[in-house]
Amino acid sequence: MNSVSLWLLFLLTGLGTLLQRLSFIFLIGKVGMPEWLRRALRFVPAAALAALVFPALTHPAGILDLSLGNVRLLAGLVGALVAWRTRNVLLTLAAGMLALWVLQLF
Image 1: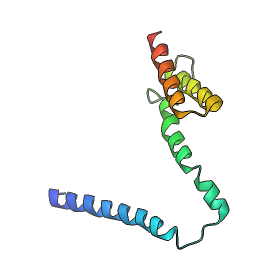
Image 2: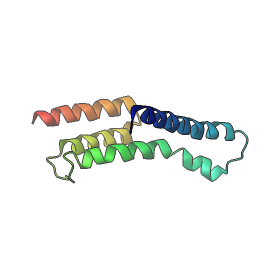
Image 3: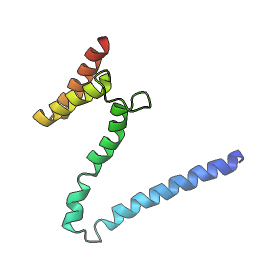
Image 4: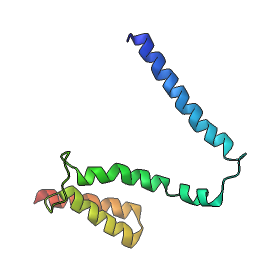
């Protein structure tokens, strides 16, 4: 594949992504959405974030590691506990990072 074809592919893919996202923005005010769908869509960002974070915690070296030696998993559990108790994003991030740094020292 030559460079012109590659750039054309990049541009068309970007345009397709843009049109797909714009279609939802334009349709959201014109098409009625059922309330159950509106409620369900509120959980999409949290589910997407969990889908990105969970493998990083449970598979730090590319294989499943649920042992007490997995410091990322332990720090993630500390962060989850802080999030559950405080519901404060900044405190959750700080506690999780502090736990990771402390656990990595030992």
